[in-house]
Amino acid sequence: MLLEMKENDLIVSKTDTKSRLTYVNEIFMTMAEYTEEELLGKPHNIVRHPDMPKSIFKLLWDKIQSKEEIFAYVINKTKNGNEYWVLANVTASVDANGNIIGYYSVRRKPTDSALSVIKPLYQEMIQAERSGGIEAGTKILTDLLHKEGVSYDEYIIAL
Ligand SMILES: Cc1cc2nc3c(=O)[nH]c(=O)nc-3n(C[C@H](O)[C@H](O)[C@H](O)COP(=O)(O)O)c2cc1C
Image (cartoon, rainbow, N blue to C red; front, side, top):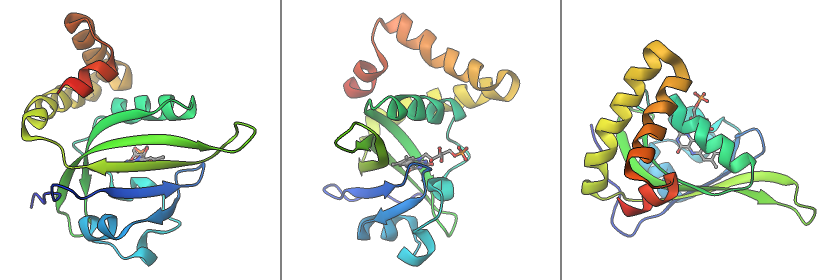
């Protein structure tokens, strides 16, 4: 079943450097249908959904490991097999010396119009990944950005 975030809700999580959950807010637990105990210490891919292209997660990790923020549309899977879409912002947390000490993500409800663009794009990327791997999935995205003449950030923010 497709679950929807409420208009003003924010889903928040923090992880250690290995993407193990160190903090989840109440709304995270409600949406993901897990208890705090079931989540803390687990890898963040506990909510991974098969409709997410691998190449989007590669882009996410490339960016956050270089201390750049990323905005990405993500579909997540709940404990009971339900699903929900978010627009996520993910960043690295750094100490005074600039070392990455963990990661942080805040998510809001995506608009229907953005999802009507993202869903077919992700399907196309997944399809490409089946035969050509992450490289082929990434190519679908970079070709699109090239055609539109925009960066990834510009494209996502304009949706
Ligand atoms: C702070 C943070 C938040 C993340 N949020 C999600 C998320 O909501 N859903 C998700 O599937 N992956 C999220 N990820 C990415 C996962 O760590 C993982 O890369 C992804 O689920 C793909 O799983 P896999 O690498 O095992 O294929 C997040 C990572 C970090 C560091």
